[in-house]
Amino acid sequence: MVIDAPLLVELGMHHEVDRLIVVTSTKIQQMERLKKRDGRSPEEALKLFSSQMLVEEKEKLGDFVIRNEGSLEEMKKRAKEVFKELKKGNLQKSKEQ
Image 1 (cartoon, rainbow, N blue to C red):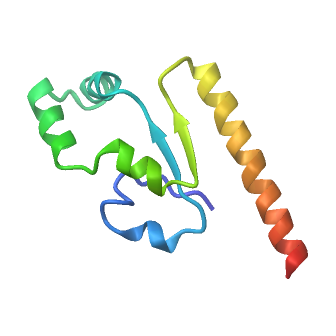
Image 2: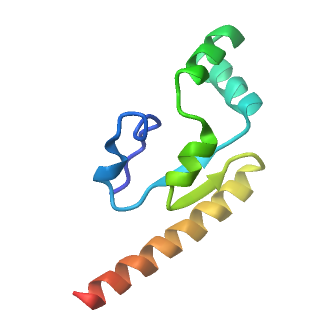
């Protein structure tokens, strides 16, 4: 099962999952996406970012990090790589049991 929860770490719920995938992008990209998706002003976006954990800290907690800073194709490629690693880990886990 995959849970898409941007505030999973901030809420301390990352301890409840088997693997944590952190998806990051630059602050500028995040602000542009918030503006496009939610219509937030730059001031609102900055306020939101300042209330969240630093991306660098989240990356340290993640089992996998996907940087969503390039093209959609690059993002898909990295997501597929992570999925393969997750499948491999589950197969190894099943064999050990």
